[in-house]
View 1 (cartoon, rainbow, N blue to C red):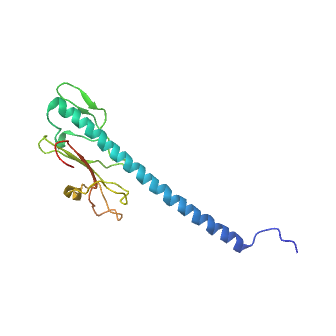
View 2 (cartoon, rainbow, N blue to C red):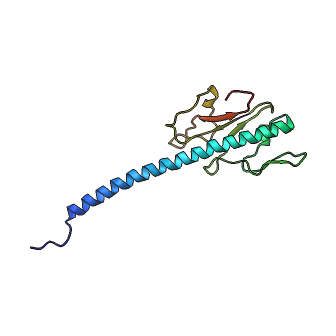
View 3 (cartoon, rainbow, N blue to C red):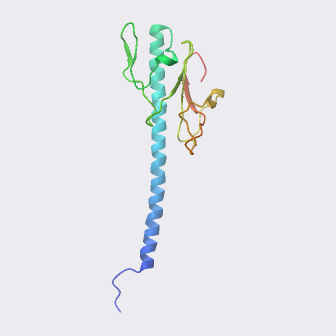
Amino acid sequence: MNKKGFTLIELLIVIIILGALASLITGNFFTSLKKGRDTKRKGDLEQIQRTLEMYYEDKRTYPLTAELAFGSALTDSVSGKVYMQRVPNDPISGKNYQYLSADGTSYKIFACLENVLQILPYISTESTLTCGNCKAPDGTTDTPCIWAVSSTNISP
């Protein structure tokens, strides 16, 4: 008897192997996306930090919390000088970074990182701030913001 096709068991084994390989590749892909967004967050905060230091050099004050609008330009209302065309938002749509500056003498900007397995340079007491952007995997519970930059006159 001459056999020309595959048996059902052979086909099932091949499908199971392909499914396992696909799940491994998909997991790595989503981890890479998270790491990429975290890198963008860190870069955004450093860019905002440099811009705020230029703003401070000109005005001798930092913008107050209400004056810094994410997603819009940072300009000097008196001279019209544009410091940043568009203050970046968090890469996840609908979220902003948390900016705190009560009196204009200092500031801190907080972000939530998706890759919680990374090694952090420090854990400050204010890193426990829950800024509303950071959610646990259940999607409802606020978790602490774990990345921050600050003005040069205070420690992060």
